[in-house]
Image (cartoon, rainbow, N blue to C red; front, side, top):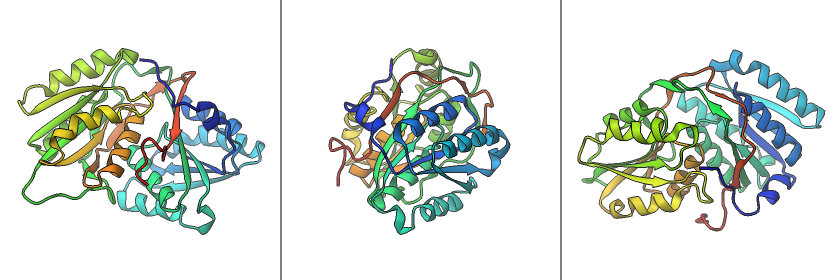
Length: 314
């Protein structure tokens, strides 16, 4: 299914903003997408979070981005981070702590940003009343084999771990993707009484065979698994379908939510958490990423305002 963008796309991508925030990636779409961001948004600052573990892989893209930004008169700051969640959380929070960040307009490019980082960046910026927009660029193609593998132990996301009610069983809300074993590990780790799995609709990138069929084959055995369809590229990124699916379980279970599907689904889960703070967000980091993860960049982008009036609770 072709991605759609919220009404007002032209406004989102042409209005001048104060800063862009990204995580450095080695994929072609990281560089190509950021070029679009810099030209269309004309920011004063560019913040690039750089994972030390992938310094060599991202070096060429970071050099080119820096050169382009400087040519456009944009100040560039690279922020070195490690995958350790405590270090990562503190670094993100401290980056946006100076008073100069208060009430700024910020574009968060989530294209190559881990979901845990997306949620922490969103919350850090919202806490200082920044006006947050986001953008996501799909690739032309994904690697035909594996994308991620060797999943590390899942964890609840710090400051987004919900409020568990004593005596209640756990319900796992999972937005599936191409790494089916990663989904299976989340199920094994949380041992939920109920599992609700959102399956991305459409046939893009062999989604039907690599995601829908593979996920059902691997996880459809227990009687406590329920599937529902959603479109992460819709205006609300599937939030309405997610809410409909979990509504019968909200007052009965402690709900843990995880996104392994299209990156915009992480925006939907974040909004779900804002509306229902008792729902915990979970992250299952991968230890290995395919160097040929993707190629090219799609023509259309997915973009929106984080605190759009249709979704905001503040």
